[in-house]
View 1 (spheres, rainbow, N blue to C red):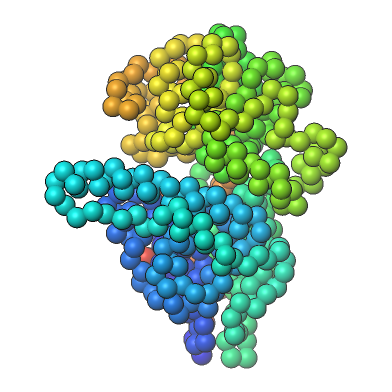
View 2 (cartoon, rainbow, N blue to C red):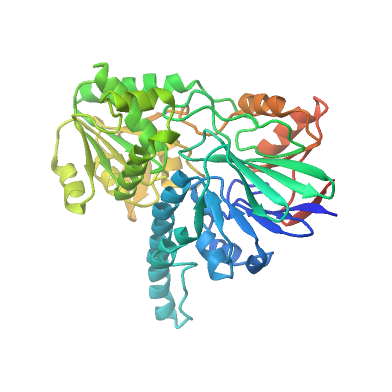
Length: 464
């Protein structure tokens, strides 16, 4: 008998998570994430499969972030016929996230094909369309936390709360190998303790092997309470100048966290009752899913909702869907807060708000998430004197405030605490982290006598 794990993606990088469990009787895929990078690499890597999707007995999904679920429509187009297992919240989030991903790809391909037609080149196709993405959730089968379920002849799965985003899971597999059971834990991504809205990550016991993220394997987060304090200070300072607070925010989880903290500040009268706008149809859809799946929220948030203090509904909060209303905010000179996608300022309505507000010294651009190299968001964080938006140069005169305390990923100390709680372990595989972060974390664990390994893409390892 032999049990193997093949690391397909999300190794020595933080994107495109996907890993294959191979036994003599079954093949189980953990996540089918979309590799996110430059256009040519994006389409090449996401359309190449180093396994046969038709042979899969199950696909188990940890959560609804695109780098973990984004290539599910592509896998289905290439032959997947099995069930996809996840929590009900993940299923509902995947529906809107994948449809949005399909829409973005269609828009990108339309742009590419304008150039291809002009150059007489073959026309390109998206990995999948919005219509194809909409059909994906028909294959989903919802599992509750702590429910042990047989997904193949020799594999049982139990989902535990990962505390990362709504419905996120630590996947625990019990794999029959002859007369013994191999227990593997998959904690990619792992949340933090005491995050707003969510429960703390569950600590799985009795593991033989652990596949663990290392995104912040060499970094320490500021306490989450600091996010609320800095948010309060940024808003009040901007209101004193009669300016606007522009918040580029990821639509899933980060937007809801910001709304949650703003609701607390408004309730406590720590900030004035200025208008707060959530200007993103996708973020609105996701927030509706949060309201529906209250069972996945922590007891404090559920209690607040039950007592009529819904953090996603308060007097001066307004959700905007139409483009007309969105554009109308530019003519409104009152102090206000505008939360808009996308988080890295590369697309979406946030670009129009930056275009109209970035040169005004009264305004604040409030950064609440990671900004990748070469993105407009990173240039703003670095406070470049001049930035380009829609091909036009603008002076960065608005104040830039960065709040690093917002993060849904465990830092190096939280990761070490998690590992300590899972001991003894035969081996730890570090994934979902840049090589530098992963290596420093691996060295730290190795010094404590643990067997740690950073796999390579497409490497296959025997679990014995």
